[in-house]
Length: 307
Length: 263
Image (cartoon, rainbow over all chains, first blue to last red; front, side, top):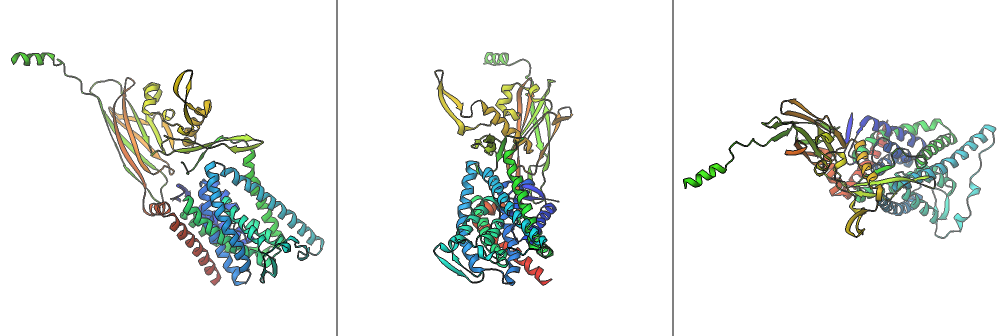
C-alpha cells in the first residue's frame, strides 16, 4: 500500500514506514533516547531525500519523547530546572544549527558534515559506552561492587561562576556546562536530524554527574524543546517538513516506545547500555564508511535549494 | 482584361499541388491528478498522419516536463576521503523527458536537426551558464568557455544519466507504434517522482530526415486534495505549517501516553 508524500514528493510503502517507526520507537523507549540517529539513515536508505528525512524526524522525535516524558514526569523523575537550563542552551544551538545546515547545503557540503558527524560522534560515544558497560558487566560477573561515581565529579564544574542549585538532582553547579551542552546538542539536532539523547544521556551521567534516575526524563525534556524548535525552524526556513511522513512514523513510534519501555525492565542497566553502544557504534561506522568507499556513481544530484 | 485573365491562368500551376502532409494527435488524459495513492500514471497518445503521397513517414514524440535547474556535485578523493566538489547549476533541464519514436532517432534525422529540436537525451539544451565566461581566443572575440573545461561534457552527461536512473528521462526508439496505415500510438509513463506542472508533448512528423509537420499538446500534472492543501500550506505559510505540525506531533505523543496509561 503506497502513500504519496506531498513534501518529499516520493511514494513510500506505508506499512513499511509504520513498522520502521515502531522498531525505532521500541529501541527509543527501551533505552530512553530519541532514536533519531537510527531513523534518519534508515529513511534516507528507503529513498526519502535527506533534507526531508532530517527535518521530518524532528516531529517524530518530539512526539515520541513527549509520549515517554509524561511517564517519567508522573514518577517525578524529571528535573525541570536542569531541563530548563539545558533547553535554553538548546534553543540557541537549534537556531544556529538550522542556519548552519542551510549554508552547508548551499555549499554542497551538507552530506560530508552529516557523515562526519555520524562517524565521529557515534563511534566515540558508542566506543566509550561499550568499554564502560562491558567492564561493568565483567565486574559484576567477578562479584565486585560497582564503581562509585559520586567522588569522581570533575573539579572544574565547581570552579566556574554563575552557580545554581538543582534540588531535584542534588547538585550545586555552574549553569555554564549545561548551557554549553544544551547548545551543542541543539546544533547537532539540526544538522544530524537527531534528538541528541545519545550524547546528552552519557554527558549528564559522566560529566554533570546527575543521579541516574533523573537523567533520562530530564534529557527527554530538553530533546522535546530542542526538536520542537528545530522542526518549526526547518519548516519555516527550508520547507522540508513532511507531516504525512511524520504521522506514519509517529503511529508506529508511539506504540513501539511504550512497548520498549516495558521490555527494558527485563534487562540490567549495563546490559542495556552495552546493546545500545553496539547499535550506536554500528550506525556510526556504517555512515562513515561512505566517506572511504569508492562511489559507484561519482556525481550526485542535490535536491532543492537552487539559485 | 481578358488578356490579363488569360495571363493569370497561364502563370498558375498547371498541376494541383499535393496537400502538405499533416499530423494530428490526442492524449487519453490531459490532467494527471496526484493524490495520496499516486504511484505513477500511464498516458496513451493516439495520432494520425495525413499524407496523400506515399513517402515514408517517421513519427517522433517528445514529452517535456517543467524546467527545473539542477544542482550537481562530483565526488572526488581528498586525503583518502570522498568529498563533494563545489556544486554546479545546470539550466535548461526539463523535470521530465521522454523521447519516443518508431525507429532510432539517429536513423530519422541528422545530428543538427535533432540538436535543434532537442530530440533525444543527448540533445537536450542543458548548460551551466554560471560556469561560462566569454574571452578572446586566438584573436576571436566572445568565445564562450566553460570553467569546467573539457570535463564539461562529463558533467552534462552525468545530469542526464542521474535523471535517467531516477526514471525521469527516457528514450524509447520503439515507443511509437503504427497500429494501422497512418494511425499511430505511443505510451507515456509517469513515475511517482514526476514533477508537478505543465508538460508539453510535441508530436513531429519526419520525411526524408526533415520535420514536415508538428502538433503540440499540453498535459497538466497537479497535486489534488489533501496533498495539494499540505503542499501549498507548507510553501505559502511555512511558519504556521511548522507550528501546526509540531503541535500535532506533540499532541499525538501526549495522547499515546495517556492511552497507554489507562490500560
